[in-house]
Amino acid sequence: MAKKVLTLSLALAMLVLCVAPVLAETGNPSYTIMYVYTDNGKNLNVRSSPYVGENIIGQARFGESLKVKRFLENGWACIIWNLTGEAYVQSRYLQWNRPGSYTPATATPAPTAAPTVAPYINNPGSSYSNYANTYTDTLAVLNAEFRTARTVTPFVIVVRPSRASGWVNMRWAPSKDTEVITTYRSGARLTVIAETQSWYQVVDHDTEITGFMMKAYTTRQN
Image (cartoon, rainbow, N blue to C red; front, side, top):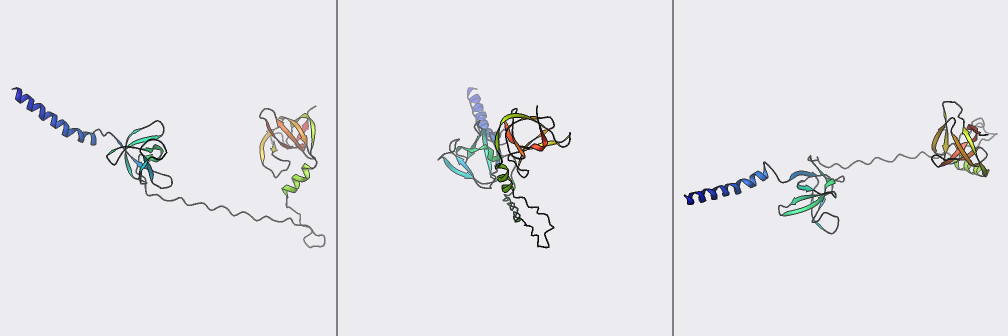
């Protein structure tokens, strides 16, 4: 009787050993299949340790499937490499779906810069003398304006746009051709720290922004 029980136990043990690998491979796999996806279509380095260094042991091709065992908190994934052991890849280069073939992005050609138009100088004796000179030399305007600059004892101005519902631009330099930093509605108060012939250099003490505003759209607070 004891011999029969021992034989039955051995048979059950052999059955478990035979079935376990099948269950691990199919019904309850110990890994997850993911695919290599690199932005440039290049291979992904496989490393012996989860950090970047002199530890590359192989490369996985773009679109290749990898068996991922677990994810680490530091942005790495542990994989089964060559069915011989564990290795590591950066998890940001893995995705769940198999990618299509890599197609390099087509570079967008840079726009051709418009040629700079030289200023037209009206010649009283020319048939073109009635044409208005519309060319604006920003640098010349800035130079002319800055030559009139002077410091002042700080005082407060109130923003007064041409329309009550409008606004006034604060610019980084005293010229209407320069970039707008921000805008202000009617009634906003700013502190003047310097001035030129047509502009105030102002400070917004709420935001600590400094820029230039045209005098014509402000009034001095009494």
